[in-house]
Image 1 (cartoon, rainbow, N blue to C red):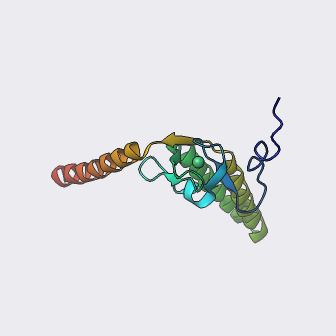
Image 2 (spheres, rainbow, N blue to C red):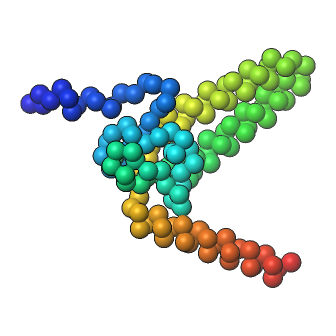
Image 3 (cartoon, protein in one colour):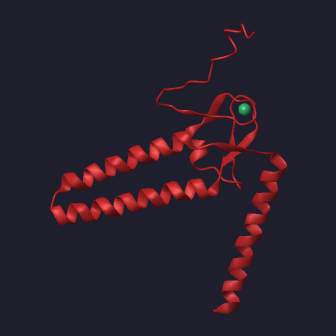
Length: 138
Ligand SMILES: [Zn+2]
């Protein structure tokens, strides 16, 4: 028996242009779209409702970008072959539409603030380590 009109559907369905992602901590649609797009383990997105951190899985994130680049290349080739700018523009529009759809469907993974800090530190050390190795190899 769930007779709670104020609590159940509020924030669940969100079709506004300013799409917000569902927070894995509080299940509110309150994680800003832009923050999600640039989120990773090192720099997670923050929920505007509960302030907890979450991020997209990096394979999902890079998969969307790779697919986008492939679509742009394919439409560029199609435009060259058909000698039509419209074909290229249609390809670009398709890329943007796919990108928006894919991002809307991505799931967020919860991450704690301490984990995010550790991942950030590890990321920096890995970058510095790679740089040092590159110096010695060359
Ligand atoms: Zn939240």
